Image (cartoon, rainbow, N blue to C red; front, top):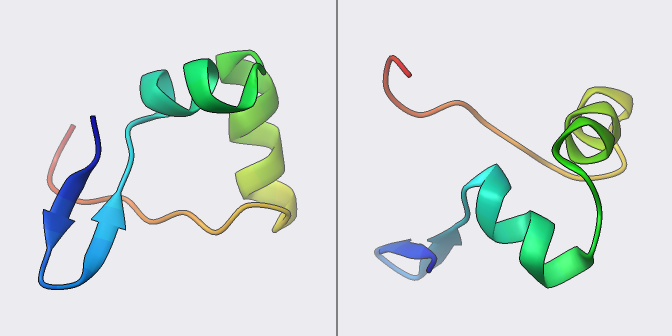
Length: 44
């Protein structure tokens, strides 16, 4: 379930696994390569 802050939706990697049908590692690699925009929020 995405978190909505103002008009922007934020997804956890676990949410993207279900939506995109990729593995957690693939999503992390896509973010690192710039294929998916990602930011870290908080101190997780």
